[in-house]
Image (cartoon, rainbow, N blue to C red; front, side, top):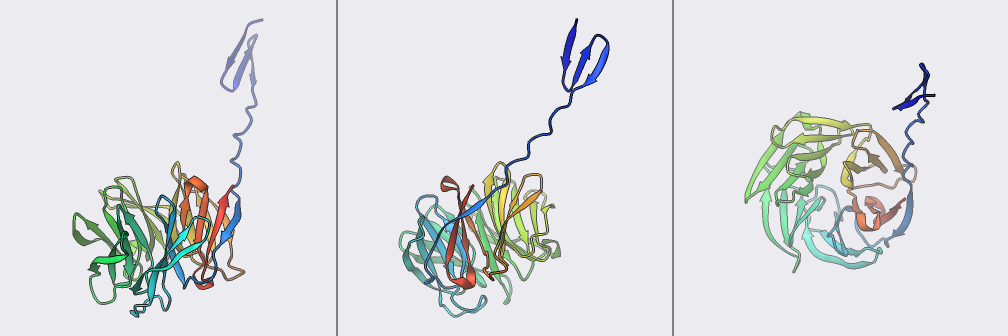
Length: 288
């Protein structure tokens, strides 16, 4: 008997038999397990940023989200949830998104972007939004040091590149941009709160492509790897968004009225860090 095996097809003495190939195994659902929670001495924590070593920076609004009251501050928290320096730097106005490049911490300050020297906690320079009603929200820094900043209320994305501060994107197609993430040299991800979507911008052409939607008030965006992302919904949800645009809800704390603001992910420990906003704490979840 002559037998030839072909992909998904078997030939036996002139008869064709269709080999039943098992369906591709579905990936195991991601599970979040609570690892730790800080105490509640934080004050309306809106954003958390891992420095790549051993510190979490936390932006505390400590007041109204658009108040120019100087009561906002940045905290330093360890990777085990210990608040090491509650008011590492203070005197800010409702600080929100943060981005880090070398020894410079860029923080939004309602109508302006502030650059803080991480060695001494002192503000070194500021850049004002265009117009009097700027509402700067998130910050991301590309590998080459280019800084992108969202203006959530005014459908703008600013860019700080080689010392030049300008409006890079502008228009209703941004759909109230909040979270930002620079990916490589040619892509910027945007969390568009108006339509609850994760969108991608080609930096060369400025063409916007929707990746996934149905996430309500999109806030933080962090890479998980291999083109996958974790995305938070400020109302209290966390999602895992795959490279193909499919998504999975990982967490829903809306029934407990616990927010999920601008998150970060510590890949080496597989920890998602969630600022709870009005609950005045950070909560860390182990990704399993």
